Image (cartoon, rainbow, N blue to C red):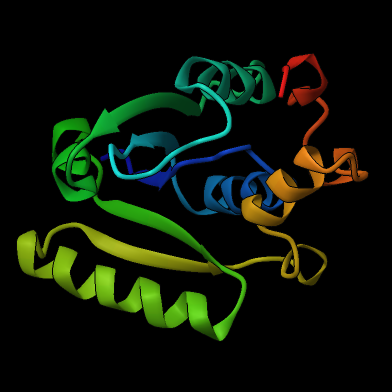
Length: 157
């Protein structure tokens, strides 16, 4: 039986921290589906198509990673994809509290899909997509926080 994990997020933009979690996930699971969520209540800096393209470029040579987008509940997407796990990265205690609440609700919705928490490398704990977007908007140095395949310099702000 193949173990499939879904790594959900907005990925606006996709960071080295996200990449780190996927690499750790690939050590535990046969396949990781990076699921770019579309949330009508959330305004993103980068269009969905660009985020999908960047992530696909990062994993162009990794056949065990699929990149998809979805709307609605993550648990329903997991069911649709045949995934038994939700992969989530933790940077801080605050992340744990937030993720724990979601994991408990997901378990109520479908106890066959387990949430797995992976700690971020220490060098990634202080940097979030929110911080990177602020650097980009304000002309700060942000490239060191993104995989090389994520080239936001092409975008117009």
